[in-house]
Length: 495
Image (tube, rainbow, N blue to C red; front, side, top):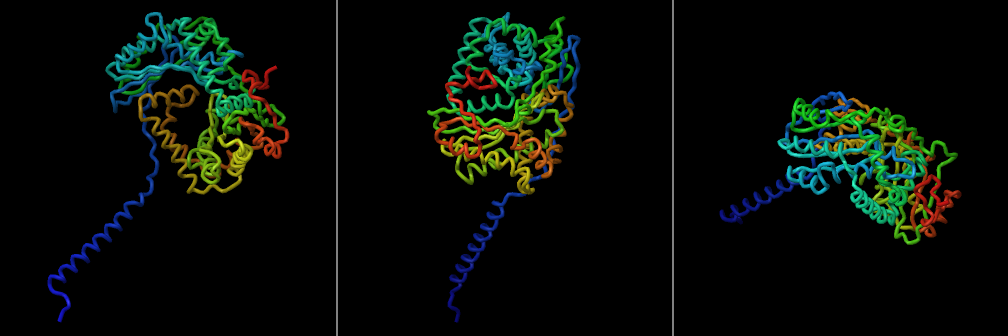
């Protein structure tokens, strides 16, 4: 006789079925929680840029991409902070920033209101190697937007009241920035690497240099470098090349090329890193007793944008930097000595800087300096497995891809290639070039270009808390009280 009635047997079957379904659900969920392997990166296919040079020497480049009804345009002057006169650091950036602060036809508020009425944006500024004015707008409103862009570049008035307003803003920003150990360390690192050469001063200037800039300096900078034969106009987005060239001719065709030759500094700048001429790298401590933490930077010369090592360099930097990079893994994740550690490889027309940095409590300043230097050495001599290299290359490729998603980003990438004399077609080979970098390439680059033995060390913080330990490794350390720091000189000391 069965122990189960038909009803009991049916209930048991239902329970077993429910259990089986639940188990299968768990299996399915477990399978779903395992992400599929990443697909091989694909190179973006950017339409071939079309270009022409106007009679006055202005190079015009157009990239047609009609996926969204937006257009961006950037007028790029091929010089920036590197042509700042000595003791007038920040002049190029101030000059470029003032472009949108008033023209012969419109005041600063009128410019802002006109662009806002078009639903667009306009901005200007300088960096190393370039000064730019950029506008972005719906394609149906691009013609009046480009007219405003041409106006601010060609007809700025540089009114005294706007200069003084901007000067006050710069000085306020510098006051805040120079109270931070991290900013001081970055400024000092630039001076240590480049000395009195053009890349040595802060791009945004110093309190002394900003205070010294006069309107005549600004107008002279504009007259010397803002000229069609030293500029290019890059237009990208929902526009045809024919329409873009016509608008370029209308707005810039009568821009007169001065009869005077370009300043010598604009065409042949000798930027020789100070570290290449020094007997040995410098180890500098800026003593800031009120600092709540220490900023640590290891700095040396890096590479040019046009160097053959460029792709090896940016992959090597990716291995070191980022949340999953070696510096952050060693200093933050493993040891808990910082909220973040990373590196930066800045590429420019001439050799730019490489820096590895972190901020930490004062007591661990010396330890973090040793760890930063140590990781550079470890990368050149140790193993770099594919499980580490492949994801770091993916980070580089992903960042590049995201930069092309907007019309403005696309224009910036093309403008950068043009600025450094590179083929515009290189934008479509970026992914393959990154993918081609091997572990051996990274190790060779790290050992040759990032040799820690040639690196300078800068620490800004409360020196009494880390100096004894630092001197055990670097007995010849230079100590400069923050009150005696002079960012206007390679000596870094007030005379």
